[in-house]
Length: 314
Image 1 (cartoon, helix red, strand yellow):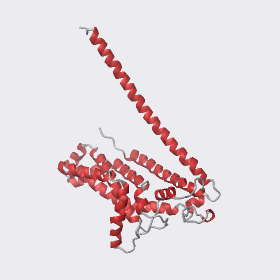
Image 2 (cartoon, helix red, strand yellow):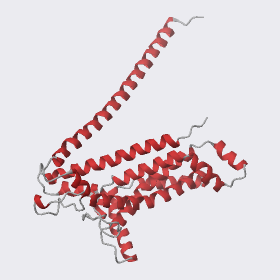
Image 3 (cartoon, helix red, strand yellow):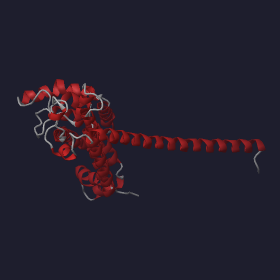
Image 4 (spheres, one colour):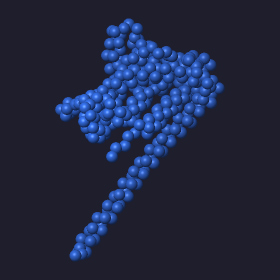
């Protein structure tokens, strides 16, 4: 029995509208992807073109940039006396990042294991929102938290800590990265099939043994990706280190000393009165390119590790 012509026309019109909507969605996604690519190309062009004004100057050499032990664009009285060795900034960045990872990685992983394998629905219902609240705290607030609470606490424990130091900034950045590590690691562990857990229980494993020996190894690619993403986030953190780490570039491993990071220097240079077009001003782009390369390499390493340890389940 054929449909009436009115219903046939309505069905055809509905099909045409659906096709148009689908095409519009595909075009919108393509435009969004193209905009993302153009933004990335624009950022690369800006960094490379502006940093050329720094590395092409006669006072700057690539060898000196990566090997000199002093960084004085904001301290030297003249350009001739300025030293452009990025090692002190790298030292400060790594000190803050390592401390942040020592805080966020173990705490985030333990919390993720608890939420994924042991927490009741009631506990999850208040612990997850708490972590999301921590993730939503503005970084400037964490910076003041480091200055007003963490630093005095460290100074109370030891007189060797400066008012602005790498340890307080690292702890604050670790708190900032904690929700990211926990959330991504938990998602990776919850994606592990239930059958693997049941098989472990059938072999006589306890819940703790199942979590550590079965679930965590099965979710290793996602957990490592979370760790590397948190590392990149800590390296690129700006506001906390600009407030709490200090402004003195120091080349050592002492967490109690001041530690100007690469992002902290960029903030200080932008706030300074150095004239645009000078090698001192362009030094911020040299630092920015170095920071971009570090985060890019970490992203590549994360992709390789994800492919190496990725598990496929039916």
